[in-house]
Length: 113
Image (cartoon, rainbow, N blue to C red; front, side, top):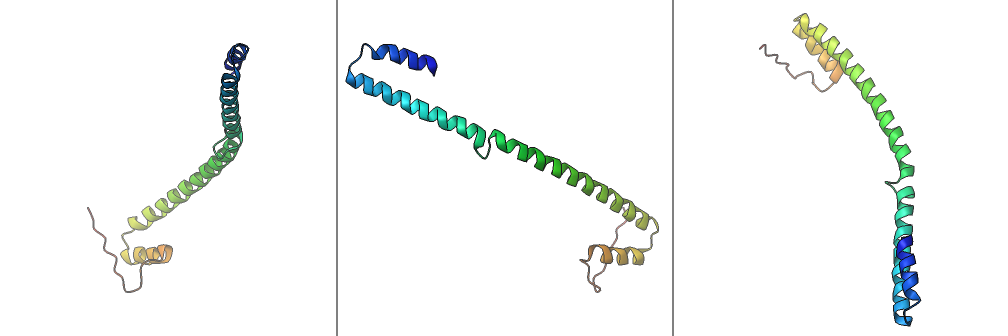
C-alpha cells in the first residue's frame, strides 16, 4: 500500500487534474477497503476477539461430553448387570421406569442372537 501510494505520488507531480482526481479516487478506495478489512479482522463475528468466546465454548462442550460419556458408561454397566440375570420382567420394569417411553400395555421382545 505504501509503495502504491509513493508510486502514484511521484506520478502526480507530472500529471494533470484529471489524472490527479483519478489517483485520489483509487487511493481513497483502497484506503477504505483496507480500513474495513482490518476492522473486520478484529471485531467481526469471525474476528480475533470472538476466538476467545469459541475457545471457552469448546472447553464447556468438552466437559459436557466427558460427563455424558461417564453417564453413558455407568448406564451401560447397569444395563449389562440387568441383562445378565435373564429376568425379563425385571428388565421390562427397569426399562419402563428409566426411559419412560413404554406404556403398561406395551410388550418387550428380546431376541437372542
